[in-house]
Image (cartoon, rainbow, N blue to C red; front, side):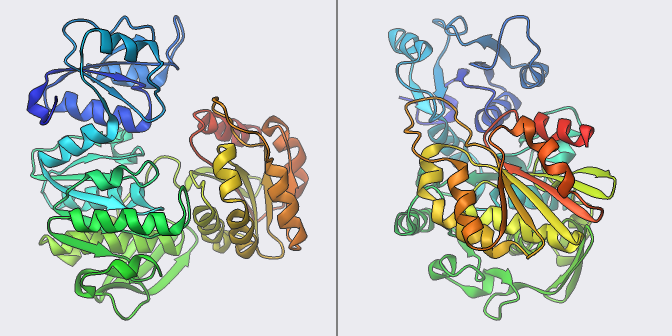
Length: 458
């Protein structure tokens, strides 16, 4: 049984191209482990960018046919999407190789460092990236394992979702979607928000309460979020957006195009970003940084040069008066926040969304309808294409068109285009000058290419 990261040297990842798996694989390689892996998206004689980036880091990549696992393999790691029926899992069992989930391994890694775990149903990747930048600019040389690529790391030709520093701090995302957040015992725990996403609210509160109780030191929460603030221990270390009962609260917030200005504890901040949620995430990062001894001015100077993360309000460009923005928003609160963040940029926002999975769409149907409807101005529009299906035994008893019909019934401008390849032709007459075209969706690996192609053809 593997109980410590010193208990193994040769590790194999099944599904290594996944964003969560590739991050841990790169981290382990960075601390000197022998790392290899396979993925169902790796095919013979076919270029795969993630595979190339992993191999450039010294991580051996194999087809998902079992060829990468042998007697020398000491540990096999699987994501929640990998079932026991997968041949490689069965082969590992035959060789009596321990098989553990990604979250279990991340928990072991977290115990080896002073860890800051960022939790919540929205904003984990952004807040982690901001905090990483502040700690790096403060000379603390932190490490990070996250769910999205940081632009500053991507510029080095890397995937961007992991970095190994020589300092004592490690920043991780604590994910509630699979319940793994309860496995971590961080030095500092951060709770950004609690909104209905993968579970019912009472289940989420139970999970985040365990996370709070497992946190060894500071537990910092968002006083702006109704449910999160119920778990607050000390408002003198909490953050928020224009609230009185949080030390690190955002005040004097303004958005001018793609620039945000605000203050925290009187310190002026400037950031190239959009939306109040971005300032809220910044306040979370600043709260943590200041609590571990980083001066507020260093925080402000650092965030002024923050370059963002992959597919989080990523600006693809402007054509014919239309700004095109690609975003990872995929739950009701995120979609609504994303739409609102774009509204100061133009007279009209035309948003497109591809829901992910039949079960989560069914579970969140009313929340999607209510949140998106409330976010839309009279001139704004929401478009959807059919639900992304990743395979498996899902019951296909709901369509994205059901959501569109519900939103239309609320008097909003809502349209359904079943096949997203037809989107541009249908949407083009709706794209006036001074419009933002916002593309939203997650967990479909082809979305990045789809967004870029659509922008090129605009």
